[in-house]
Length: 201
Image 1: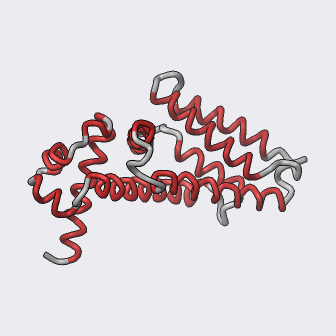
Image 2: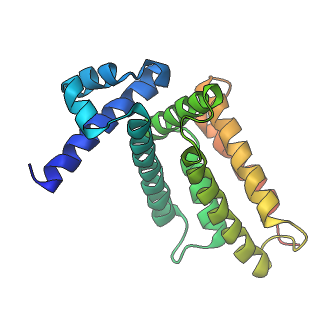
């Protein structure tokens, strides 16, 4: 097998785990269940991933890459040319709200990982928190640029604002998945908060 073949097989197995996480939660994602979903033998899963933790981490990395690609696509399509801080923040946060099949799948799967961490905090060690920290740091930099440009109140703390926006979007996403509101309603709430944040002083 070539290196490409090995990567394709690892991807096939990891994507099977992500499908199980989306549909049933990670409590159902045993190595045997993943093998069945991927259409391969249990021994092959164990060959590529010696432990379930290794498989979970690999799949989480792939999920993060999918979300990253979605955010980059939304920035390219909606944030302006060149992208403005406000356009970038709006695009990134809007892309997270579960408004279509892709974002609903990503949100559900992240929720499955979150539930796993709540039940067993050590299972993903520090790896599970890396993506949210990177995203929050990116938003902080965008808000700092907006503050320097006079687009938000100079008294606003970009770090607190970024943390609050992410918490709000995560809450809105949970509400959409639970049927509390539609994706469009969630986007309207987000837009109102961003309008208030980016109101020039």
